[in-house]
Amino acid sequence: MAADPPPSPSPLVAAVDLGGTKTAGAVVTGTGELLARAECPTAADGDAEAVFAGVARVLDELAGHPAWPGVTAVGVGSAGPVDTVAGTVSPVNIPSWRGFPLVRRIAERTALPVRLLGDGVALAEAEHWLGAAAGYRDALCMVVSTGVGGGLVLDGRVRPGPSGNAGHIGHLSIQWDGDPCPCGGRGCLEGLASGPAIVRHARAAGWRPTEGGPLTARAVADSARTGDGAALTAFDLAARALAAAIAGTAALVELQAVVIGGGVAQSGPLLFDPLTRHLTHYAGLPFTRGLHLHPAHFGPDAGLIGAAAAALRT
Image (cartoon, rainbow, N blue to C red; front, side):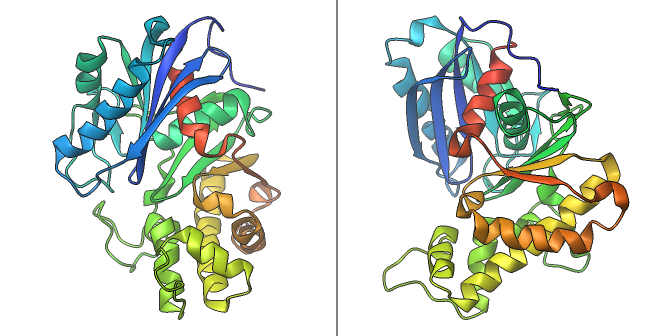
């Protein structure tokens, strides 16, 4: 059963998708059409005001679009954890933001109501509304990018939990004696399957970028497509960690499908082929087998579409 659509196709909303690498924004219609876009790098290592300056820049650019006067609310999907009750965010991969009052700051800048959700929940909102999870009542939707997040669709509805963090699969501990994580745990999935983790795996296995080339998961993927053994090993390790986390989640809540978006998911078969293979080893209980794996329908726009879906219900 598909999620209930936002109430009307006529309102316009603004959407912001804030991650550790970039901050994106859009003006979005009630049918999910993006009328305008803006984007800038996230100053993740800067102080709190430097990070917010990127958000402000994106909002200001959107405000210059002719459609802006029709915007009725702002939806924000942020790297987490978030606190949707307090309106604050504390992204693990943005150290200067701890309890940062993002809702209040955006409301002050735009004079509009603001709806906050975690980036994984935003992906779930988008994919269950109009995307790859629309035909399922029970699904896990994941972001695998600079970080790893998630959102749950259970019994036909997105379930963000009391503070907005339900489904935050990136901080499941996959290795109980693994490396410390900035979240305070050890051996977290994010430290094993994110884009930066794939780069670490590849370099440890002997991969080197081309001279002057970037140290990114995309560069590792490019090498893997040429048959580079170290690069292929890195994706296999990430896929194995993802499989363990997905199987554990399926054992807890029973799932029909898993939808994976984010930059790493755009590597396609390099991630999905070993993930499918490893799931056969980790998903042993009968009700955890046969999960349908899908790439996110919206690709890099999923966070914007999901934030917009939430804002349309504000």
